Structures are given as C-alpha cells and as structure tokens.
Length: 99
Image (cartoon, rainbow, N blue to C red; front, top):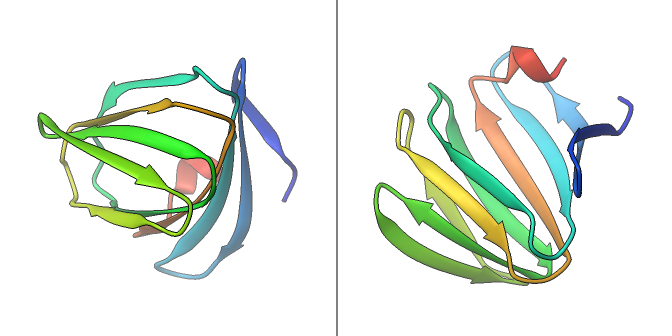
C-alpha cells in the first residue's frame, strides 16, 4: 500500500493485513506529537529507530529502539517523537480506516 502523510512530519505505510490483524509502519520527524485519542483496536508499538514518549491512560512510557508496548482497546493514548523515529504497530482488529 502507498505511504500516506498523516500530518506534517508523520507518515504511515500499511505493511500487511489479514482479516483481523494489521501491521503498519509509522515514521515520525523529531518533535511530532500525536494528540490524545482512543480506538477499539488493541495496538502494539515496536520501535525500530529513535525514541517515543507515550502517555497511556495518564501513565508515561518511554520507548527506544528495541522496546515495545501494548495499548489496550479504548485506552486513551498520545505520543511525542523525541527524535526521528521508525515505529512498527500492529492493530487488531484491523484498521479499516487505514485501507
């Protein structure tokens, strides 16, 4: 699937998807902020390169290359890229809004 610019400094590319699971690559420029949001999908985040500061249900989680976390369905979360970051996310069920 094509690379999509989510907003300035953030791109998304769907790498694979099936009936219930989707794998997506996000590339963040340093300083990019993803506003607080929630969705029905369980989400995992694995950092390939860089550092992200997540806020999940009010709890700060710092991730750097080689680290990951799981965000439960409907949990409010946001993120800030502390440096240029490549982040591989999985979503279940798949994000139909990304297709």
